[in-house]
Amino acid sequence: MRLLGIETSCDETAVALVELSTEGPPRLCHSLISSQTQLHERWGGVVPEIATREHLRNLPLLTRQLLAETSLTPESLDGIAVTSGPGLPTALLVGTSYAKGLAAALGKPIYGINHLEGHLFSPFLDGKVSIEFPFVGLIVSGGHTLLVSVEGWNCYRKLGGTVDDAAGEAFDKVARLLGLPYPGGPQIEKLARAGNPKAYDFPQSFPERDNFNFSFSGLKTSVRYFLDAHPEVKANAPLLAGVSASFQEAVVEVLVKKAIRATRSVKAKSLIAAGGVVCNGELRKKLQAECETFGIQLRLAEATHCTDNAAMIASIAAEKLRAGCLTEFHRDFNPNESLFG
Ligand code: KG4
Ligand code: ZN
Image 1 (spheres, rainbow, N blue to C red):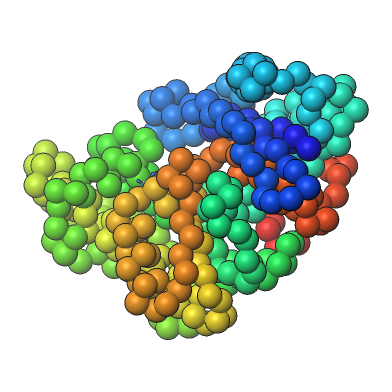
Image 2: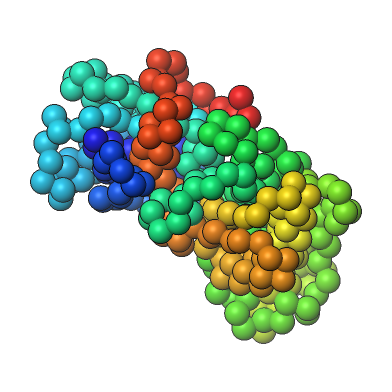
């Protein structure tokens, strides 16, 4: 069985092809991503109108390219999996409309996949390790910061989440304050390599023991006040590196601390981490070290699968079909679709 995956929830147009046989996990055959980062960069963030226009232009082209590069015809597809939410409304509209049109024309089934569910299972999509429930999932991206207890298919319980900005959003906003281009995460990580993470003591959010929530807007504000009081920082490379490293440390420490605590509190054997911010080397290193200390099995999404992609959408659809717990998509997309039913 061959499934086409489509992802258009934000500023990446992505398609992927996954094959599912009677035995073994789904096999990822091909994955293409058209990133719009450069188009949004001059605006300092994602502009929904631009994203939508780009999806409209690129989705048919990418799908054709995917089929050409895998020597397949549209008729050889057995189903289509598409991100149904959460995300930008008009961006989701393009992806789901295209998927519905294609499915109707081919007479093939269509499946809706929650974008966060895609991220949650993205560490498993290369087939190297199999999915074993229960586990705890840390999703950290530009739009979300969530800790989830994953107890089975469609059985997800929220342990905590951000009460204001997402971690990636904080990286992007602080990068902007520092005069760095969008997206800010990779820029801050690069600068931070030359800086001392203990140079400045920026506040961590909600460090209390039993709380799995996050807050990053206070941290961002404290960096802003600091920069207002020290205007010389932006033009001074060593100072800029120190601020970047200290900010990164504050975000990473709280993410790691809470993810470990959450995993231990529900007595899960493994922790997975996914989403754009998991590209961050410091976060990966600290998660690894802490998981080793506490005997927790860590599954990190490959860096190429951390940011938005369609491979995670097609793969999770195939896994759920294999498990017999995916029904056809007969509703509309939902920009606020929850992972928790
Ligand atoms: O998952 P993603 O591609 O999109 C959303 O679904 O939001 O994540 C994008 C976010 C951006 O905020 C970006 O700054 C952040 O991930 N990011 C990083 C790094 N690479 C991307 N944050 C910290 N360090 C990085 N290396
Ligand atoms: Zn995402």
